[in-house]
Image (cartoon, rainbow, N blue to C red; front, side, top):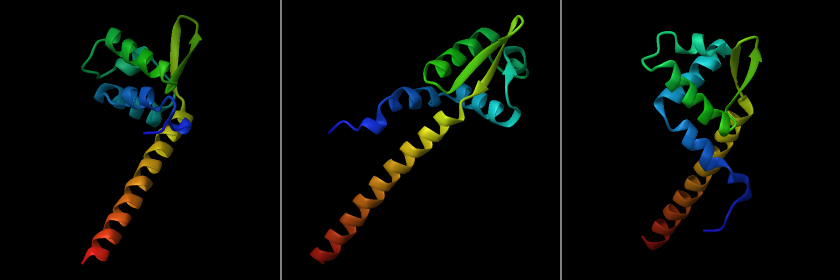
Length: 111
C-alpha cells in the first residue's frame, strides 16, 4: 500500500485517542476549557499520576498542551489535532464509500 503524506503522524494521534480515559479527558477539556491536573482528577476513577501519564501521551500526539501558571500546569485541548482526526476519518469513509460503490457496480454488471 503506498504511503500517504496526509496520514503522516495519524497513527500516533489515533493511538492517543484509543483509550477510554484519554477520551474522557478530551471530553472534559472540550466541555470546560483549560483545566489544571487537580480539576481534571476531580471525580476521576484513576490517580493524579495516571492522569498525568495520559496527558503526556496526548501531549506527544499534539492533542493537548500545557502552560505553567505559578506552581500549576494548565492543560488545554489543541482542537486542530481533533480536526486532523476528523479529516482522516472522513477520508477513510470516502474510500470505503467509493469501494462499496465499485462493488455494487461490479455485482450489478455480473447479474
